[in-house]
Image 1: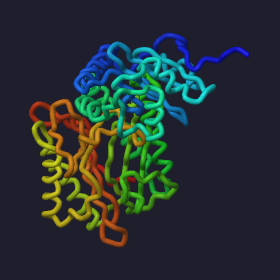
Image 2: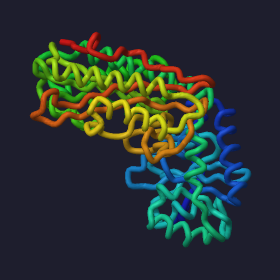
Image 3: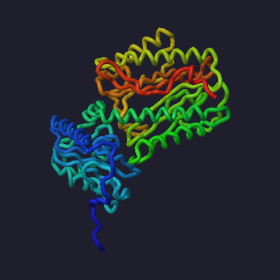
Image 4: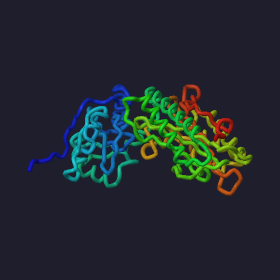
Length: 402
């Protein structure tokens, strides 16, 4: 019987067009290597979807198999499963190794071929499982291990001009999905029907704007009535009724980069109690945007919005933090937790950061104005303030529809 390899190179075809130019990935790796040098790390094993994609351009689909990017002083190598064929090689910056299923541990043998043994190894403490950490120690026998995740998060928080250009495109795609949803809203329609209209519009728009990309993961959460009480409530088959509160949420995904548009809407009419809550949340949204700019901490912005809502007797209806970062993230991977508008985040805003403003008030069922109210815009922090790149209008003047 012919011996089967533990891992091999499968450079099948030519390199594809990546989301960014080679110089962008080179700059990101330079930043990572600087962080590695500062921490004394000689081999970095990145295992999360967001960091592998950020530093290599390759967005993996694990499906029960692990993936990695190994970075040393001179090499950058993605490690992928044989089930993917040559796609990881074509879609990554740097080199690629394919590991096989023939023998348990081949994933770590492939990593060892690049990282070596007895070195200072950087890992992601917020992603590596206990089981994987044990395997890393067994196969790489590291001199010591250093959690590199905080340093990579800090690097990802500060967007390059190329990233900001892509995020701008994503915001425009989200707007296109919003307009498609607005046209689809009608009494008797199901949430899923409206959601599909928005998703399809965004998929087509992404394909038009990015003809060389891979297309996946774009989605819509369109909620109605009691289903609006949470920001992440999934779509259902509920039929829309006149007077319903609606929540429009479009999420285009472009090469792993997430953008979003979120709007409160009403079907046909809005009662006085609901209009008062809606107006107050819109005012909180505008007040929050006015506080965004360089030199202000996330906690300070949060405190200002808290005081605004407290003065109106509404703070106890607040649902969550007021905003978060953008970049390589999705509802199942990634998040710069250090850039969220919450009381416990002291990060100071800097030019080049991108953050949302999205206050939400949830009024319990049975009370006047029941439902969830949320507006969401994307803001780029500039040298002297912020730039709002979301174009779809908010408020009752445009969003009582159907």
